[in-house]
Every structure is written in C-alpha cells, then in structure tokens.
Image (cartoon, rainbow, N blue to C red; front, side, top):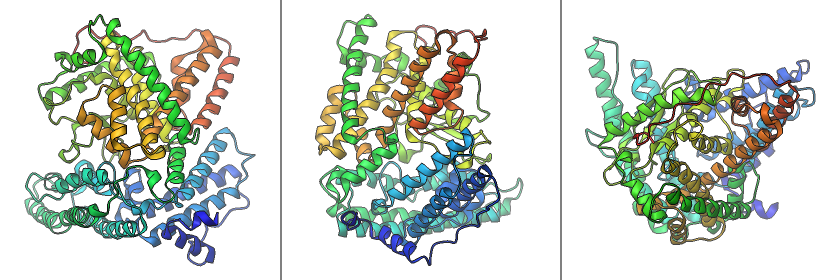
Length: 622
C-alpha cells in the first residue's frame, strides 16, 4: 500500500491527510437511531444527492435540481477534490451504519448500488485524472459550449437568469485557470496527454474561441425577454455580447495557446496509459468501472478478438446472402454508394430520421409494453463537433422540463462521407435504445435520484447495442443488406474493445491500432483515425458496450430456455428496464428472480400485438 501511495496524486494525498486530521471534513448529518432501516437509507441517499450537487456543477445542471446551477464549484482544485473525497468517505461510513438485512429486495438493491458507487468513486481518487482534464471529445470546454447551444438560450429571459448564467461563466473562468495549472503539474510529474490527443483538441478549442458573428456563442446565447420589451432585449443582448467577447472566448483562446505553445512540446509520443506512472493499475480501474469488474483488461482483449473474428466471418457471409457477386469490401462499398442510403443534404437526412421515428413508434408495441412520456428533438450537430462526433449521438434531457432530449445528427460533408443505413443508428441512440431506456429510468419517480439520473455504463451502452439488434423483430431489417448496419455496429463495438485494451494495456502503437481496425472493419480512413483517437482520449470508454450487450443477450437466451412457451419478450424487456441501469451482476440476479417468479405463474394467454409491418423493399429508411 505504501508503494502505491508514493505515486498517488498529491491532491489525493492532501485529501487523505486532511480527512485523517478530522478537522476539515464536513460534519456528518445526525443519524436517527429510531427510524426504520428503509427510511434511514432513503434519507441518506437523497441527502447525498443534494449535497453532492452543491460540489458538482455538471451533476446539478444535468439533473432535475437547477437551483444548484447558481453556485458551481471548481472541481479541479485541491480543496475541491479534498471536499469531494471527504464527502464520499463520510457517506460510505453512514451507509455502513444502516442495517441491510431488514431491507426489502428494492432496498437491498439501492443499498448495494450506492455502496458500490461510493467505493468505486473513492478508489478513483487514487489516480490523478485532474492532471489530464481536457481532450477533443468530452471535457469541460465542450460541455460548457453544449450548455450554451442546447439549453442556456432558453433560460436568459430575465436579469436573474443572466446573473445565474454569469455564475456559470465564472466557473468556466476558474476551471480554465486551474486546468492550466494542473496540466503544468502533470508535465512536471510525467502525466501528460499523447501528442495525438493534443493535436485533435486544438482545432476544437480554436473553433470555440473564434470571435465571429457566426460563432456558437454569438448564435446561441441570445436573450428572450418578454414580448414587446425591446429595451430589455437590447440591454441583455449587449450584456451577453460583452461577456462572450471579454470572458468566454478568451478562456478558449488561452487554453488553445497554452496547449499549442507550452504543452505540445512536452506531450508524450507514447499513446497508451501503460506509459504513465500507475498507468496499468489506473487502466485496470477504468476497465472495472466500465464493465462492472467482470474481467481484466487481458481477458477483455481476448474476448474482443474472439468476437471480432466471429462477426467478421458473419460479415463475409452477407454478400452471398444478398445475392451480391463481389467480396465483402466490394459489398460494403456498394452499400455506401447506394442511393437508398445517400442524402442530398442536411434537411433530407433529418427528414429521413423523422420518418423513421414514426415507423419505429408504430412497431414498438410488438416488443415493448410501455413508452416514456418524454419526447426528443432531432437536430444537426454543432459545427465545432462535426469532426469528432459519430453519425448519430444522443443527449438526455436536462430534466424538470428545462430542455428536451436531443438526437444529434452529423450532417457535415454528406457528399464526402460514405452513406450509411440509418435504422441501426436510430434504434441504438433513440428508440428503443438510449432515449427509451434513459427516459423510462428518469420518469421512474419511485427510484432514488442517484439511480434515476445515473446508471452503470455497461448496461446503458449494452442496451443501445441490444436495441440495434432488434431491427429484425421490429420489421426494419427485411432485406439481407439492411442487416449489415446492425452487424457493423456489433463489429465496431468488439473492435473498440480490442483497440482500447491493445493501446492501453498491451503497448500497441497508434499505427498498430489503425492496421487492426482496417483489417477487420470496413471503415474509411477518416472514421478509423477518429475511432482510434477517441480511444486514446477516453481510455476505457469503448469497453462497456460489449460487456453489456453480451450479458443482455445471454439473459434473454436464459429466459427463453427456462420459460419456453411462457416467455414473453415484452415482459422480459420490462423486467430488464424496471430498475434502471443496474450493474451487470445485480441485473443478472434480478432477472434470475424474475425468471423464477414467471415460471411459477400458471400460463395464461397473452395479447401480443401483431408484428410490425415490414418496411417496403427499397425504402430509403433502412
């Protein structure tokens, strides 16, 4: 243990010393000795959510507690990290004082999830993630811009809203200064980003820091005062423009210039986490968090290789099944040039997704008994994200009616990008994929808030890939070539596991990862480069989809074999989704209980709606 602590983040060590002195940690809330364990547990997890929101601005802005957005904190500074770790330890100790045995099944589930999340979060403080706070794909600069593009413009309707928004600007200014300090500290201690990651990040920061009328902040952050109040509109607009030009844009320029001039010369030529101090154990932790600890990085790599080989063989059989005379690459190339999968422009592609939304909604009752109340919007993605975003992506609702969920379509350079079948993408990201699952979970008001607005990555990503596999049952994959999109999604997922573990646990070079990807997945050069660089920038993120997908498939197979004629796919899906995005082992135990209960019920006729009407051959929606 002492050897490990020698390499820990100085910030985490400071936290450990601070807590050990028993002088700076926030006092624990009084514990009731008379309340029932279930009541104590309920109060504890809700109190945690409220207290955590005051120290985690992105948690509060992404959940249903908008009031906390008025006082965001600096989450990279040593004191903020110390406070966060102290809070996690305190609530883990409070949980230990709650008796688990008297709880009912639902209470035990909440208890186990909460304990596991606190333990994982505490373990994460061992590793100095605060020294690598920025990348091209998902970090605070992009999140701040997304808040402006997606939600803030709707909130600036009064002087109060403007002041709340300014508090978030102050947070971003503080974050920028602290991020640069931490990056410098990382340079000193040998924790630096790969040059490839920095190179990807610079154009994103440059685009966000551009002072031009068409820039994201100039377009999105426009005041919306009461109708007819022209003077208030003009005053707010002038104030907003001043804040954008004098405070927001300089933050992006400062980050960009620091990375380009000071940091890039010291960024590392190596790419994997194994090159960092504590890198192997750090990556093993990320893998455990992404997959619920089911397998080691080496085991995940071997599993990914097996899956890639199996799926690649399946892909090679598709041309013959489709009556195509050429090989696999020629078959895929023919699909990418097929006019059924090509779109004249952004509006054409957006309309195709809207038409597909209608078709899928009509087919859903065949497989699902419930539907969420929440809707979603279909939008073109912001210009600063076009080079780093996939063809389709999803952002959940901010909650409390503040802003709808969004299905983001990458409509940039359609004429230069290979055409794709949109149905598998839609099923994965929208319905019955991420939007369906996350919205049902968020609307389940009986769940504690940390479960409504959280969830295990392996479940969430695995459910998305499982949803894409349902195209046959939904009547969307009638032609053999239409199935290629779903098969390619599975292949991308499995290859991502191989590449991620290869880069970060097996000393692969970037060139080696690209060679593997090109040898096994029919991708163009730009897509392959982007996929590998994303795995470099976000270690472990690519691991969750395969673990979750294989678990869901195995649970469905188990249920079908156990229940035989009693198996009802709609009841199975309801059982999988009823408790939110559970860790995979807890999901397995829960489904085993459901199978046992379903087997004990006398068989009865079920009214299952007829299968969805098949998509007409040649329809553009496939």
